[in-house]
Image (cartoon, rainbow, N blue to C red; front, top):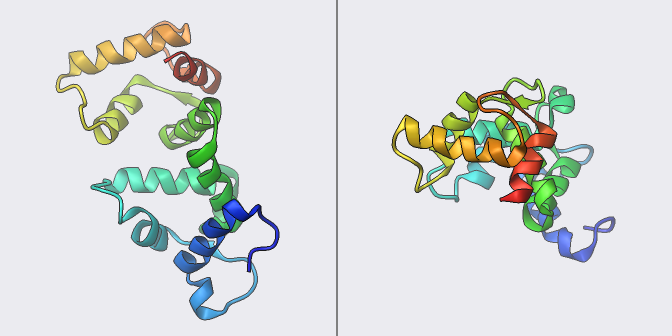
Length: 162
C-alpha cells in the first residue's frame, strides 16, 4: 500500500514491488531490484536495448555511492523514474551524465560519448567524422575546447542550450 508518496507516484511503487519480487513473496524490509530483474522486468519491454546500455542505466539508477546494496532501492527507483518522467532538462542531463560517466570520475570524454551515441541514437551518424562533428557542436555549446573532457556542469550547459 502506498502511503508516503503522492498518488501520481504510487503506481511506480507498485511496479517496483512487482518487479523486485517483493509483492509476490510478501517480503518485508528493504527491497532491492537486482540487475537481472531490472533488465527483465523494466528494460526488456523497451525496443532493442543493448546490454551495455542496460548496465549503464542500472548503474545510474543505483548510484555510485550505494553500489554495496546490490540493487536499486525503492527510493532510488522512484527518484530516477520521476527525473525521467517529469524532471527538467538539468535533472535529465544529470541522469544521462551518470549513465555516460563509466569511470565515475565526473567527466565525459569524446570516446565515451561516441560509443554511447552509437547505441542510443537510431539516426546516428555513420562515420567517425560525423560523430566528431556532432560532438564538436556539443562541446561548442558547453564552451569547452574539443576534445577536452566535459564536466557535469559543462555537459548540463550544453544540453540546456540544445
